[in-house]
Length: 138
Image (cartoon, rainbow, N blue to C red):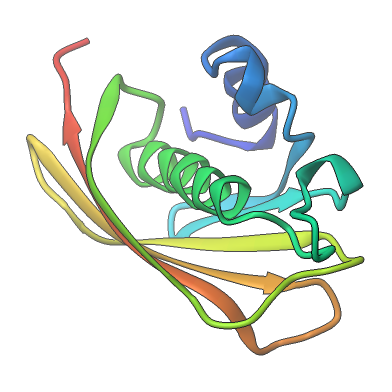
């Protein structure tokens, strides 16, 4: 059975910590080639300058990659972040953030991916993340 949008929505509600759920994420697209998650704009996620804080953006990237790895694996399996490097390229303000997550390599015990985050309505990357995950025995 494929890891579809319904399975992804259940995963979002059941597996992630309450503070991740408080980011108000939604699964926009899910498929074997990756996932797109939306983080709705909220002033509670902003720094004093009105831009969405880096911590929220990094959490969005990390969470989006869990969905991309799950889709590539055909279903959720426990995993843990080993490494994530985020480059912040431009601020996001007054717009939803979209994370486009793609698996670069899926092995038996490790997965590697790349996430591009854009502000809705602006195709220019606002942030990029390179990620690595240890795939745990379920």
